[in-house]
Length: 385
Ligand SMILES: NC(=O)c1ccc[n+]([C@@H]2O[C@H](COP(=O)([O-])OP(=O)(O)OC[C@H]3O[C@@H](n4cnc5c(N)ncnc54)[C@H](OP(=O)(O)O)[C@@H]3O)[C@@H](O)[C@H]2O)c1
Image (cartoon, rainbow, N blue to C red; front, side):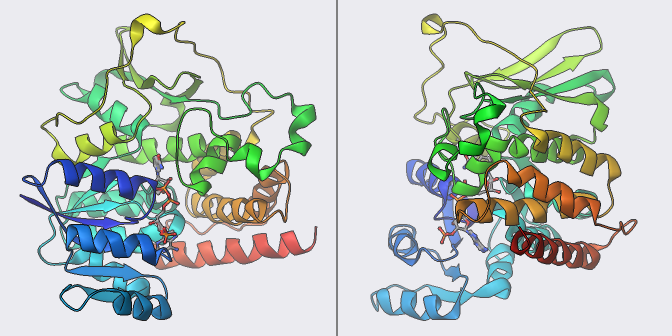
């Protein structure tokens, strides 16, 4: 029986994790859960899965949640950063699913690694911000870091049993998002509703906007570099509108291994949770006969400059990826609040990156300070628009 902590249990990834736990109660037991503000969903999750600890962001919500639970429910309720760390390091937990959104995932995840918990990593921002530090902690603490991002799960599966020295290249596939065929002349009319209307995947708002700008793919490039210890110039992106090939590895003999599946995160999540076994999850195989073909295109970095920004940030390294990440989080939130246009997202990120003076070989506290600096800078630039 594997004891699980789910950080971000009320989100898109978190609820899919719980569906798998529900299907395999003999394999998994939920020990801790966490959310930001959605106390109603968290309450029903507590009632269904009986965790010993649940965490929310604010103290008021913690008090309200406690008062909503019936007296016979025995679950401690904590709040704030220290609460998330408690949930991530809870003594009887074996595996932490890191599925909070954005930079909020970094500290709980790194603390979980230091507490020698295996990690199922959905929160790619953790590796974008502090990939070198996090991967060193993974090695030093001998924990298993399993990717949950479908692309990275695909690469992990394709690399299984292979020699890393035989790898020529990684292809991360991208659906292209809702604006794959939209001419750039129409980009300044893109609304929040348009951008949230992803063609293939149902996800949280932040990653859905990141998919529309292709920043999501940029963040994934940085994530892949750290996870698989592969140089940036060996990681390419291909737009694959059908989202059936989840990613591919090219070997030096010209062979390509690809992993395919329907566009549903349960496959990657279940694989991370049960590795090296595969679970008979309730998921169909892709219907190959009914497909009109699998297509692959070069991404258009002129219409989607966020992808180039991510490559630039990763090439520069040090504190720059943390700046990219923080500026992007602020820009996406401002777009969701109708404070900036879709086309202003990459411009804002570029402006913050241009103003950043890099600190070499940052430690964790420098990364966190840089994150704060970039947020403040991005917010000031928005006010000046
Ligand atoms: N969704 C996908 O298919 C997918 C695929 C690959 C990778 N990922 C990655 O997985 C992570 C989660 O994505 P998602 O789509 O599941 O997001 P989501 O649906 O927005 O859910 C995010 C979860 O994190 C919680 N949360 C949000 N802000 C928080 C904060 N500041 N502090 C603590 N908890 C916070 C939310 O709580 P509330 O519900 O209370 O707001 C919710 O439980 C992201 O890093 C994303 O890039 C997602």
